[in-house]
Structure formats: C-alpha cells, structure tokens
Image (cartoon, rainbow, N blue to C red; front, side, top):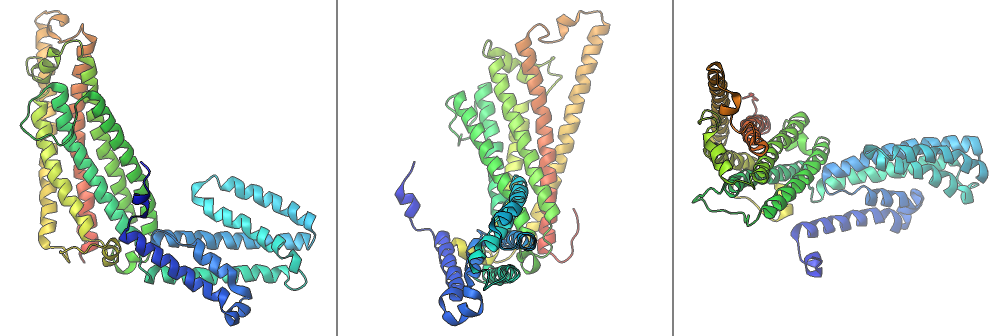
Length: 458
C-alpha cells in the first residue's frame, strides 16, 4: 500500500547516501563554477557529468559503471574521429556515417552486460560530430575528441577516489547480508516442511506452529511467495559477486576473496532450495491424490508393503529440520560478523563482537561432521529399505502369488501416485542433506580463506 510516510520517514542509510551524492556533485561543480578552473579545461561540464553518471549503490557498482563508461567513451571517440575524417563538416554525410554505428550499438544493447557501454559509445560520436559543428572553426574534431576523453578520464579518476573515501559501501558487505537473508529464508522453509507435513497427514504435534496454514491455499501462497523472494535474492547475489570481485575491499579488507567460491555458494543455495521446493510439491501432490480416501495417507506413511519400505518420514523430516536449523544459524552468523566497519556505520549499527573466535571454526566443523553422518545414515537406510522391498516382492512372486495380491495399490492410480510421491520425498530429503553438506563445506572454505593466514580445505 502506497504511503508518503514510508517514503519520507528518516532512514540512516538513505541519509548517508544522499549526503554522499551532495558531496560528489559539489566536487564536480567546482570545475564548472570556478572561472579560472573552468577556462583551463573548457568549462569542465563533462567532468561534472562523469561524476554524476558513475555513482553507484556500492563501490563495486560504481567501479563497474566507471569501467563501462570509459570503454564506451573510447570506442565512441574512435568512431567520431573516423566520421570526421570521412565526412568533415558536412552534416548530411555525418548523419550517414553515424547510422551504421547507431545500428551496431542498438544491436549490442540487447546484451545486458553491454547495455550501458554501448549507450555511451552511441552518444559520444553524436556529441563530438554534431555538437562541434557550430564551433568547427574554433575547435577541430580531433581536439573535441581529445577534450571529451580528457574530461571523462579526469571525472572518472575523481569518481574512483570519492567512491572509496566518502562513506564507502562495499558490495562484499551487501553480498554477505544477502547470503545471510537467503540462509534465513532456507531455514524458514525447512521449518515449514514439518508444519506442511502435519497439515497434509493430519499429524498432531506439540511443536508451536509459527506459520498459519489454515487452508491448503495458504500453503500454496506461502510456497509461491517464498520462491519469488528466493529468486530475487539469488539474482541480486549474482550481480553482487561481480561487483565485489573488482572493488578494492578484497585488496585490503578481505584477504583472499574468491569469486569462484562465492559463485559456487550461489549454486549450492539454489540446489538446497530446489530440494525444499520438491519436498513441498510432493506433500501437496499427496494431499491432492488423497482427497477421496484420507486413510490411504496414514497407511502409506508407515505401513507400505508391511512396513518394509520407507521408514517413518515424520521423524526423518523433523530430525533433519532441527539439524539444518542449527547449521543455518551457525553459517549465517559468519556473514554478519565479517562485515566491514564502514558498512556497520552506514547501517547505523555496531556489533558488540569485534572479531571472530577460534571456537567459531570448531562449530563449523562440528556441523559438517554431523551432516556427513546424517547423509551416510539416510543413504544406508534408503538402500536397506529398497533391498528389503525387492526381496519381499521377489519371495512372494516365487511362491506363486498373483502380483495384484501383494503389490500394494496396483489397481489404484491415486494411491500409486501417493506411493511414488512419498518415495520421491524421501529421496529429496537425502539430497537436501547432501546439498547442505556441500554448502557448509564451501562456507567453511570461505571462512578459513578470509579469516586465517593458512588456508586448509575441510
């Protein structure tokens, strides 16, 4: 709901960013307002424009914009000079020369990574060739090209310095906060699986239900909403990884920043959420197929094939939920504790803990060891149940019985779908534990890489 109060209420981070913008524009205005400086650099308007157009939400974002603007200016200036050599001061021929360049830039603009670069490259020859025609006698095209490059380089150089020294907001800090938020979202989804299971299987549990699932529509809305939020977070993470890889924070504030490991971290979060999503969909599918006969669900939950297949899923889900909940809390704490001091000032919050403790690393290793044991247990239990089921069916078949008499639900398509969904859900639970183990291993590697002098893979 739109509210002016929410738009104009005081926010410390927005105040800092607005103050930074004023300072940067003020510095750029010096080259335009002060007469002596303006005369020496031909009024310096392109310095001011470069400073204004290369601001970013983060230092890495500003550096990325600066790099793209510089590349676009250089390529555009080269085509501007070629246009001048071919067309001179003839307006008609100049426009003809600019047309293929506009077509090329318009084509390349369809690629997101080249969008801003080709925009600058397209505008530069227009400004140089068409903007100089009224002053052709006073300022030749080659001088105009050099002037634009010179002023852009000056403006970009000043922007580089100001982005670092004036309330710097590093992309690595936003990346860590984003990962922390994503892990919290995954933790909430792990907890919600137990509640959805209770709702679908009509299972009574003394555990407090933190999520209101009055109807199945509430469950579907919750799952879809969480999925949209997750995809937004992951999309932002991919962008921030690129920004963080080029900003100076990794040179002196975060020793050993590894782009490859953070990219792996992004993919592993996707793997975890995919398994969580599959488990939720399996539960909903079971509910859809069991509308005709609710007793089928309870029978399938434990007593499929005389209890030989699929151990009690509720205990497996609940135990893994508690374990992953503890692991996500430990892992997400790292990304808060290692944020830079400038980011804490920018957010208006200083944490009491100034440094990481040696026991933090021990907690990480303990979580990984427990997860590894869980993965081994789930794999062995699933394989053991599968072998028992096959042995049971084979013995009944050799005794001369008709398969319809001992293969459960062979004549009931809905029950058969439930049986498959439960089997798939158990497999997804095992894969969820494996994905969590891989994620924890990568976070452990990042932990040691960024906080210790000696890197040792776990």
